[in-house]
Amino acid sequence: MSEKPWYEGIARNEIEGKHVRAVMDSGTVIEGRLAFWGKWLVTAGSPSEGNYVLRGIGESRWLLTENVESLELVWDEHDWGLIDVKDLHHGDAVVANGRLYKVSAIMPGSFYSQVLTDTPLGQCIPVYLVSCALRRKVNVPVKPGFYQDRLGKFWARSVKSTDDGPWWSLELDSLGQPAKSDKDMANLMPLTPAHFAVGEDEESDDAGPFEGLIQYLMPKTSIAGGSTASTGR
Image (tube, rainbow, N blue to C red; front, side, top):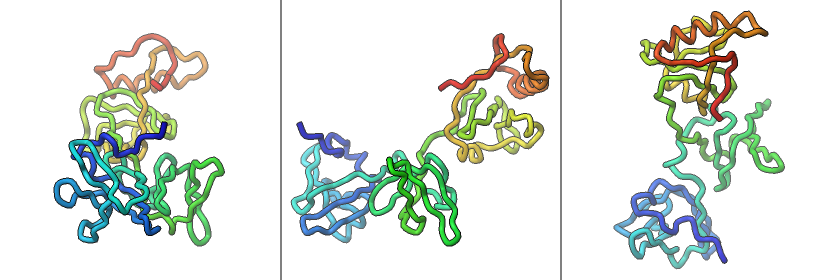
């Protein structure tokens, strides 16, 4: 049984904002953002160019137009947001030659940087071939509590926010630093819920001040017995 095309069953209001790669029967490749021309015709790129790739035959029912051989979904604005290439880090994505690649690392070079992708062979893409850089849209947590960032460091989101923000570092070498804002923390996503336990740490003399800071920042959070921290993964 053949796999259903990705556009099958998609509601009309979810069509726009998807970026595609269309191969026409002439061999021409078109890359662009889906947009409506009229009620049921869908174009890739500017509607004025007339690159019609889909036509609707009913609510949530779509067919390729007669000149389109294939239509691939590259990325979706509902899931990804554009960022500057210089801000790329592990977990982001890039589009090159009409394909989406997940970023494993950025490799600086003498003349230009390269993007190390998570492909099986670890393909590297020069940054000058990147047509757009993307970061997955995820919301910074709003619930007060403890979180671990993508670098493995711990943070507390307090009940009340200061002028700088509601986020406080729980790292011993960062105690006393100004709070961070949601915008700052967005660069450290994902933020995974963490759970701390109050108690005497037999292996470290630093537990007392550390736990005292937690209780100072989060007076309304109850923490039950033990002496370890664990993430909620």
